[in-house]
Image 1 (cartoon, rainbow, N blue to C red):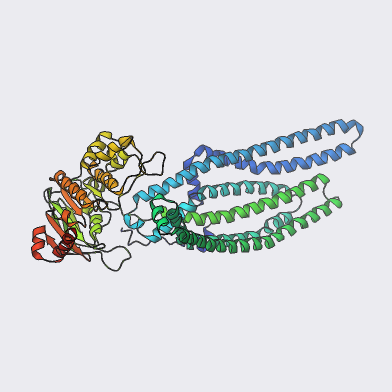
Image 2: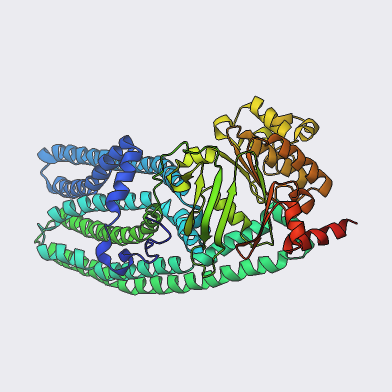
Length: 615
């Protein structure tokens, strides 16, 4: 299934449409925590159970203490010492229970801290692992970037939050059950009042949780723009232009404007949420003090003892807190489920399976063929390539010429199977690229794009990136560096191939644009297995003489390989065996330099204009 044609999961999940989906992701979050650390999960469960039981036990012992003290005061002298000793024993017992409760709560805090670190890393790793499986089309889609931003900003912290709310729900549920067991001895109606009093505030909280999530979904593009503006203002590769053109204050003001817009939305939601929460919370307060009056009047009427009155008052207060915590936990679980839906929406992004298994084609001497290839970018109306037919054999070189946007780089993306043709097919050694094993195919191709990555790593690792199997092989670094004409750069640096490049880390050295391009060229030669080498404007930062020298060197090193060059300098292009001129995604002219000059068409016109500029 092609992910670009498949129905993408909605950015407004079904979960957000109703409260019935509150537990939709709870099971998955629990499984995630369990598989992250079973010992910590078991410890959390046990400590949660104990933390739920101890408060009721403390309240019960407290009631016994009050009654024991009153009994000792009213007792005859002969029984006074025994009753006093009993009261003190109960005090010690309550102290031990309080200490045990404090230990359970500390243990819960410790388990949460340890799990938070492990689970945060686990979820972020899951997000990055998924990114490795995605197609280039996903990363060139703005809606997908919004989905990725949402997953990385919120969902990485939500699984633990959901699990802790689940454990908190269980803890308070155990507490409430133990409270109700004691409170029902006073009146079943008291238990009912206890539960119903917290519902209004809970319903309001659930409503505003959904509103907060919808707000989170809608403003993902603005959040991403804020992150982009931060990058522009705080990265060394942008600061020169930002300062030169005086763009800093403009971009900073735009950053502030986005913040103020988002702040106003947050403020309005928070004010409404807290206002409703306050007034609806008064219902619970009224219920609490109504119960106080009821219990006090029962004690005055001698229907219960003073110890029982103390216990019931404590049970009702703590019971109301437990009900409030339970309802808050359920509301929080609803909110966490909403945010977790964005994580799993991202993790379940459909990806086309690579079904190819071919590692060797039936016609090794046939090289590369493009047969009636056309391509349209996802979401675009105009095709980028139309009916492209090409053939290049081993030992031949081809140059692609055309204006920016004519489809040159897109053609390379199709060859490396970063994209698949919309129509037509591409063959390597007589075998359709779709049927090739992806790893085997890419082992055959060494590519340096115009916008190659400048890794903030060692110089040698920048070269070694061209072949991950030999990423740290210094002998291969030197060999590739010599082929890419980077030896002079290496000799000028204090630690040679072990010199850090870039300015992000200590002792890093920055290179000139031309030096970086020689490093990138060496990276292409790192993959010695590759018999197809593609250079997409890799020498744009060099002068014409240096570029000509490099391409002459490149041509000598690729005599038995397929070489594809993209360049705007025709003094270099003329070296190729065949030249393809692209216009508006179509092949306008095709032939050798001499043939195209005789044709006196678009290529001859461009060549003459450029040659005139050098005179």
